[in-house]
Image (cartoon, rainbow, N blue to C red; front, side):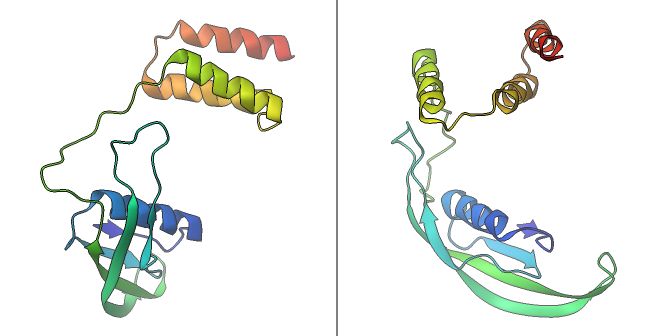
Length: 153
C-alpha cells in the first residue's frame, strides 16, 4: 500500500493506521511519505455491529529512505513499514454493513437534538442531501432539499 502522506494531518494518519490495522493481514507492506504511521494503536468497535473485531494493532518500520521528489520540489523521506499484528482473520471475507432500523436512526437524531449536539440544522440538511446523492437516491428525493433551501431565503 502506498500513501502520499505529505499533506495529511495527524488525525488522517491515525485513521489510516486504524483502517490498516483493521483490514490488512500481517506482513502487508505500507509506504508513506514524510510521516510514518503510528506504530501501534487500537481498532475501535463498530457501533451497532459486534461481529466486526476490534483491538490492538502493531506496525513496524523496516526502512527509512531519503530522496528528492519532483512533485514537492524538495527532499522527502519514504517510510517502509510492515503490519505486524492486526484484526485480520484468514477466510473472514467481506462484512455487510448492518441495517439500522429507521426508528433507531430517528431516535439517535432526536437525542442529538435534545442534547445540543445537533445545533446546526443547515449542516444537518446538507449532510443528509450529500448522503442521498452519494448513495444514489432517485432525483425526486432532492426536491425536498431544494424546497427546504428555497424556504430559507
